[in-house]
Image (tube, rainbow, N blue to C red):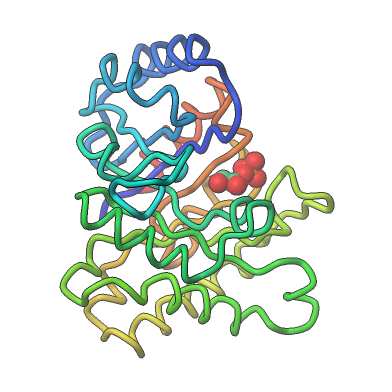
Length: 256
Ligand code: 13P
């Protein structure tokens, strides 16, 4: 299976800064066939960046979009408008769930809208610190996974990527802690079990599962060797050229 290294730039970089940064990434990176490098700039940068990108080296992801294709939805951008511009879309990121109040129903509609528009959804799931403390991790993962996939036809499920991002391990969260590879392994195993129980073993083995949460150059290799992990979703470290490239090189090394 391919390895995915996805940089989520969140609300960082002007369009000009994003363009310069992408230029540097493209200049520095060789073409790694078995590592899919993806960057998710802000929506406003997607159009200009799509013109400068070399899709053999780096692909684009949206950080979000709206689930209806057109209509009276002031301020929204639809997946149909992004069709052709991006290959992937991050959906259900915890910052959208908890700051912008997106629930599983909305996440499910967005996952379906992405697939309808030939964009691969990267469905983010993960428990908060208190949910973990109360022993609710497995329930949260199951609910977010089944809820997020509820509008996807079985035939389309092999077009989905799952990203496990424990909220408590995201670098910008108040009490950011580092998840141990064992903690990640346990939840990734659970994710595959929930998929196997709901959709069958075949799909459970095929669906790529990424890990995200304070990934950096010194821990990337350890997370990439966790059984069942097929890549990384990176926030802070993806904004620093040397770190991002180093993580991509680690992925190449670990996977070959
Ligand atoms: P950090 O890598 O900064 O912890 O962010 C993780 C994340 O939220 C990526 O989507």
